[in-house]
Image (cartoon, rainbow, N blue to C red; front, side, top):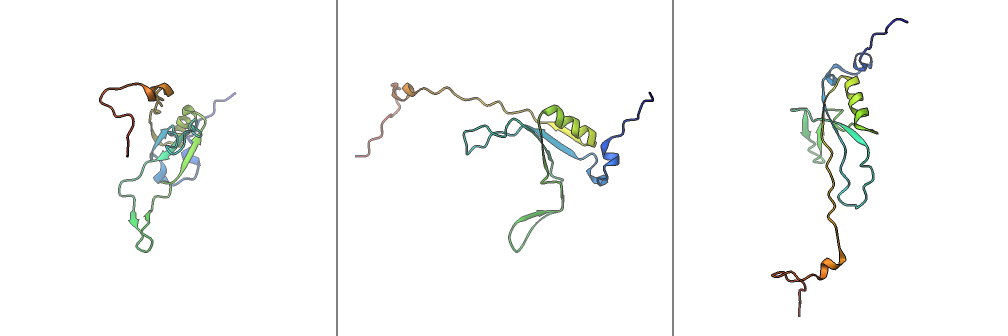
Length: 127
């Protein structure tokens, strides 16, 4: 059986040459700070870094920020870090992996509300 040459996907994908060697960030998103649940934090994401001088301007009518960089808003999700790294390597993108943030949940105890602590006002009287 003859050996097949492995060709990177960026050479045959038809993507513009500007996308090659574009730096991407691979990270695991933190949980939403407005909610206590940890949904959508088990997946890994790829985001493109913002190009320096990437044609950014402010729309004078609405005041919105606009950009000529069309992949800046692109976000891809993967099941694991290895899948995301493999995809970035296959596309020929330079990447860096941002380590995930370890959530530290402090232990909470209801009885702690009634423990005497010197020099700390526990009850604020208003009348």
